[in-house]
Image (cartoon, rainbow, N blue to C red; front, side):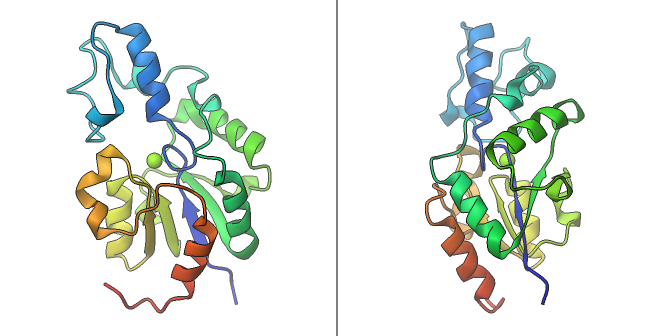
Length: 188
Ligand SMILES: [Mg+2]
């Protein structure tokens, strides 16, 4: 029997991107400081400084290599999931950030091989069994396609949190994954 495929997002799922991007935004534009609580949508164009843009906010050179791990349990839990299942890391990386993201991953999770590192914005095209992600645009289609999902609660997914299994820490994540993947896929 083939192993079940567990797709795990990177940004704001196993590491903290938006808080770091906010930090640099606020250094550049101290007259318009942003907070995490304002981040209620993936479209941040209306709240960041008028001089800010995608490249400035998400494209700072080196940004993706310095991101903090999500929490103290993340690495060990991903390792545990990877011993039982086929873990793929799936990230909607900007082309310019791919090398930084791969470096980050190798430094923290060297047990993830290159062939399990996927760059994909359209994650719904991938044939995984379970998705761990913070993005409503990824969680909603995965659930609609009958896949298991675990959401990471963030301000930008507040409006869907009551429709998904959400987990705000990686502590015990491998147990939850095991439970969901051994359940019969019947709940709707
Ligand atoms: Mg994400």
